[in-house]
Amino acid sequence: MPGLAGFVTKNPDRAAAERLLAKMMRVQLHQPSWSWSSLSVPEQGIYVGWVNSPSTGANPLTAQVGQLTLVFCGENFVPATAGHSRPDGRKAVLSSLEADPEGFVRTLNGWFAGLLIDQRKREVVLFNDRYGMHRVYYCRTPESFFFASEAKSLLAVRPETRSLDPESVGHFLGFGTVFANRTLFANVSLLPGASCWSIETPDAVNMRRYFEPGEWERQSPLSAEEFQASLSDTLRRVLPSYFVADTPVGLSLTGGLDTRMVMAGIPPDGQPRPCYTYGGVYRECFDIKIARKVAAACNLSHSVLPLGGEFFDNFLDYAERTVWLTDGCLDLTGSHEVYYSELARQYSPVRLTGNYGSEILRNVSTFKYQPVSAGVIGREVLPFLEAAREHYSAICTSHPVTFAAFSLIPWHLAGRRIAAESALVLRSPYLDNDLVSLVYRAPQAARETSQACLRAIRELHPRLARIPTDMGHGGDGWRVARTLTKTYRYVLFKGEWYYNLGMPDWLVRYERSLPLRLTEPLFLGTHKIEHYRLWFSGRLRGAIHDLFSGPHAMSRAYVDPVGVRGLIDDLEANRRNCVEDISRLGTLELVQRRFIQQAYD
Image (cartoon, rainbow, N blue to C red; front, side, top):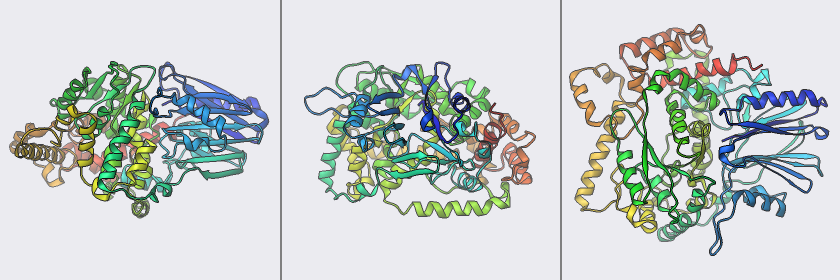
């Protein structure tokens, strides 16, 4: 989603400041139809710019309320009350500002960032949503405080940030992500979620937060029945607002529970809404087969977005764009997100998804320590790898919903969301404030199974409840038949995982043997659409070789050149599972080329 950038400075040179702002904004224009606008308040040293996107409506929201000037990027979701039409979320932002200029941010519900200029107090307030989903990067100098929705805006104007932070490299090599509000770049940090920072001068910043997760953690628990009733009621109340937009909202469907729950709350207004599912290259997966039935049950059309040959033919271009667009938050194995999102944009500029439902409602986490092989990285990096693991262990001690909503999702899962938002507006109701607040009150057992979700679907949309999920949950029919279906699909799921990302090194060597080649068609593509281990050693082998054959790829401070040469040899000879090593080291190589070595002038 289009963002903002700017700074508060002591430098009185307005012309120089506006040239600097223009440089920050130009790197955020990712679509031909995007433009940017700006606001300067020289007497306070404030310069802010924002990206305009015509296909997503009047974004950002800029308004003058008395002596307050607001720049607001993002969305605010307000459910309708009984007997009233659905409120306009953007108008609600202004109403909240007028009613309570000091505390209006706390009333907002969505993913957003903004700037409030108070001419009376001669200060500027920089804020973001309570989870930190809309990223705001910042850096400081003695005379200026810089901020931006994209890190590249800061690198464009601050040369001292154009190097990798060693501790963050340790995060990335251990987990595939950077966390704890750090970034890959030296002297660049992330604004924590729920920030409301008052900036009087660059060296006078009040770094307060308007919300702490402890407020939700201290709520009284509910019984199983009380939680079930509240879950259905909350979904019924909040879901319809996520279907509202100036153009029909595109519905990204899978065969799982999370998109099913979203569809269970679809408004019964009969409006056309395009539904689509991402398709792979091997076969029609369960997601497609089941999503087609879900769309039909809601009387909506359904399309399949295929992964075409142009993705493989131009893989390095997509990989480089992915790294650039996400500020290095998404590695090579997420390169298909940009490809699919550009296809999805043809159906609608807004995509409603079931992302984050499993993390919020059912304790699912992919945030794990899975380090690259020790032999391919330099010895000086190893201490940072161990420090990253210790830091992560401390984060894991938090409340499980706090960990999911305030760490796992905004840090570990940020890359795929940012990649999608480079082409369209992404929405998910699973970080709705009312829903997340409710889940804190759930009995522990309710988040360990799918029963509460299945029952909610049945209560909201009985027709959808009759369709089994991709893993065989729910549906009608005999219990024995349902159990057999679940077992069969689970075996396919695990078989596909082991054949792709999870294949042990000893088995990789026999992959091209007849027994394995005969079993491959049984499960490949049944559940997953991306198979990077197979692609890296097959269709993308040449691209990977080209990526690591650059003049500097073997001389980076964080790699062992002998180990990396051995890694490429192992990939080409099919001797071991190299996907994590290739993806993370390849991503850092692209970060070096695009962010560190690039001339921004």
